[in-house]
Length: 358
Image (cartoon, rainbow, N blue to C red; front, side, top):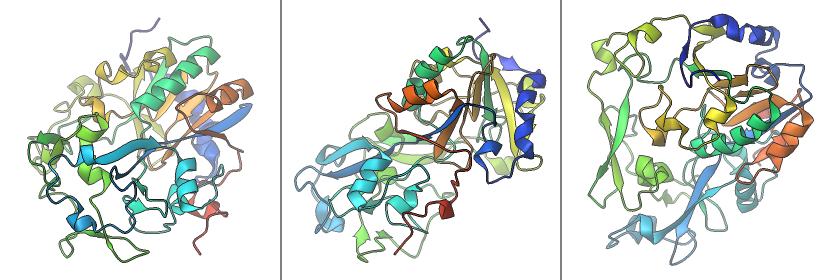
């Protein structure tokens, strides 16, 4: 068994993926390699909420609804949701090439906080990262479909803030106030408006899931509010490599690079599927300092190359290449939303032909 999450300096471990560079950039085969029996798409879950009292956001004045409410989180029914549930709420069509924005009837602009006719308000998906619970569920299946469940490689994108140096790190910290989370001065804001606007109705949208729950909500800390604060050592001070989570040796060490100058450069670590089968894996991963915001591997493969799991940094879904049996079991796994995928699938916005805006 390989040493869990030890740094891998031998870049030859990833060379078998090099043929992906010959694929068209829009092809899923540039994300997971060709030659496998089956392919699948693991959709990143979203969150939705609605007021417990009315069970709908429709017809409410969100600007006054929370007046006098001491515990905003307790007043809301909040749950993890699938893309299929979002499609049902918005009357759109769920399919393998679906794009989340189009499922919730948005083609451009803000997606977080959109309100469906059935009263649910939906959050946005996460890009470039599969949440720890979903990864654990998938990894338990992946471990059963390899002869080396305890040995493999996890490739972590080097661009995550705070990984190689202290640049780009920010944290959400609990605040006792019952008000909306305040934005840090360096965060992108629209200073001309005080609220988001619902595109369909022109009404002011209520505080979004991200605004209300932030880090605390995903950790299950009901009633907590959050304020974005920057860690000491801001990017403008030019922190040295090794001042982040990873040691200087790792931060200045060799990178596994794919697709030329696209910025897909990865730090490699020893890791088998079994290492991620426990949802507590973030506590052991050297590239994670906050389990709530743990970054999943950008690419994960076992030493026997039986499958590949990849989360492209701009995708809100994770791709898997493996056997038909593996894909079938993933599709049947509770807690995961998995759809089989053709190798010629188009996962760009224009690939969703069934949910084009009216």
